[in-house]
Image (cartoon, rainbow, N blue to C red; front, side):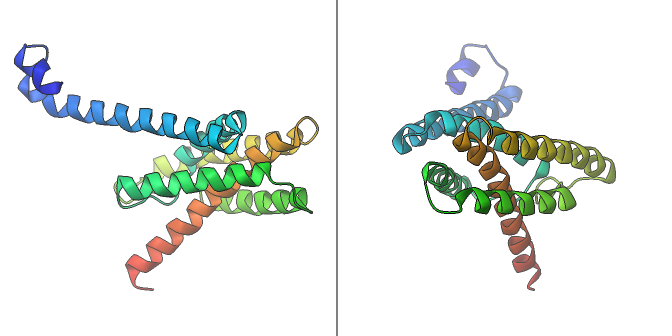
Length: 185
C-alpha cells in the first residue's frame, strides 16, 4: 500500500518511513482493539472489558511500568492480563471484595509513590517526571475513588476499575524485576 502511494506520487520517498510507521501503529492499535473485544465477548464480559481498558490505558500511559522486549511478548502478556482481570471480575469467591480493595489500596500507594516509571527507550527528564507523575497521581486517586464508589452501584464495575489499578501495579513489579535483572542484582 505504501509502495503504491509512493509510485503514484501520493507521498514522497522521504515520507515513506513515516507512513510505514503510522500504518504499523494503526494495525497494532486496531489489532489490540479487536483482540480485546474478542476476549471480552469470549469471557462473557464485553462491557467490563471496555471499562477495564478505559481505566487501565490512561493510568498505564502516565504511570508507566513493565514493557515487554518485543511486540509478541507484549501481546501475550496483555491478553493474559486482560483474561485474568476479567475472570477475577466474573468470579464469586469469599472475601473477593476485601481482597480486591486491599490489593487496590496497596497498589495505589505503590503507584502513587513511584509514578512515573520510565521506559528503556524513553527516559524522562525531571520536568517530565514531575508533570507526568502529578497526572498519574491524579488518575490513580480518581480511579480509586471511582472504584470504591462503584460498590454502591455495581460490584462488578468496582472490581473492574480496582483490578485495572492492581494490574498497573503488577506492571510496576515487572518493571522493578526487569530493572534489577538487567543490573545483575
